[in-house]
Amino acid sequence: MKLDQVREVCPRLAVMHGLKEEFTQIFEQAENLGDGTLKLLYWLVEAAQFYPKSVKTIKRWFGEIVGYFEKHTNNGIVEGINNKFKLIKRSGFGFTNWQNFEIRCLLNWYFHTYNSRFAHLKMG
Image 1 (cartoon, rainbow, N blue to C red):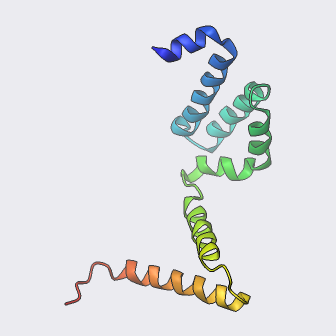
Image 2: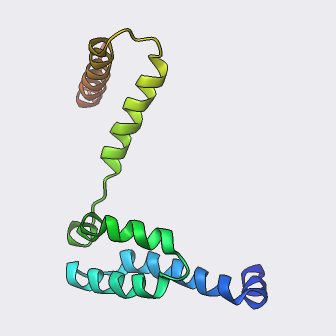
């Protein structure tokens, strides 16, 4: 397997890959908030020398990240909304004032929500 060959050639990369896999397992296997938090704390100590920027970011957002262990939810919906607003902003290049942008966002949000709620109805 190519991954095994790479690990043999570059031991540091092998450690980094192992840490990446451990990180994924923490979120897949943590049974509760305490268990997940402790495992993540241990991982941060091990990963600090290999992933300093990532460790710094995780520490900065630690409260929000460990919240996942409590209810197994993430902020995907919020990220989707932010992306939609960015798309409207890009497509609305040339809006002359804030009100036009606000109206466009609200209309997009309303019609998307409206259409989703009534998608099961057949119009004929």
